Image (cartoon, rainbow, N blue to C red; front, top):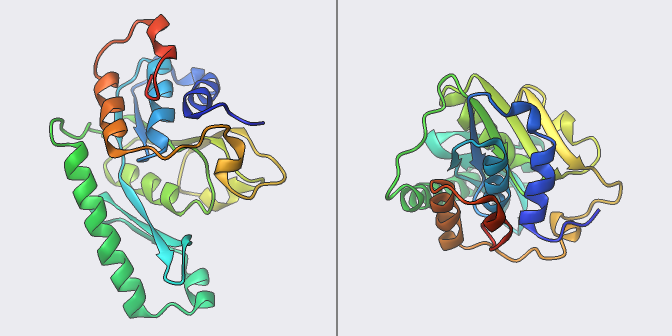
Length: 224
């Protein structure tokens, strides 16, 4: 399966989450790419949309390879096995954590400049990304949602590799995925349009979610 773009992926994902409509749901998009997907889910469930900010910790000599992640409230997830195999020193790990935590704090401040973080206490937190690769950022996001008092955490993505559920045992109460293709190399291979999402687009999605949108208008725009 190939999604046309993140809007298409979000609509297909929303169709898998209809059982949550009517519950006390807060949809949480992972910036940046997960937010346009999450907007479609939030609109379909008639639920509020917020972001949950996390950053991947890349291996120093291979930044795209995630050895962990950091998130809001100081949450940290480390793949100790990968750190050991890659030979990452304690100083290198600490430096990566400090650098990415600063990015988390700065990005959260920008996204929340005009809006308070939505309370999660007693709510169903639906954590949404545009796909799962290593899963480190998604795990951190689930932990952040739990730390903020969510009564139930649902991780929902359009695409993930086969067997992805095993990496989230105990992190989320429910796991939802549209497709788990056998030949999985990167999330982008399953999108016809996988253009990078900007901070401005994330903010636009949050603003659009806060403003009722006529159903016919939802088919337009990257955040639409």
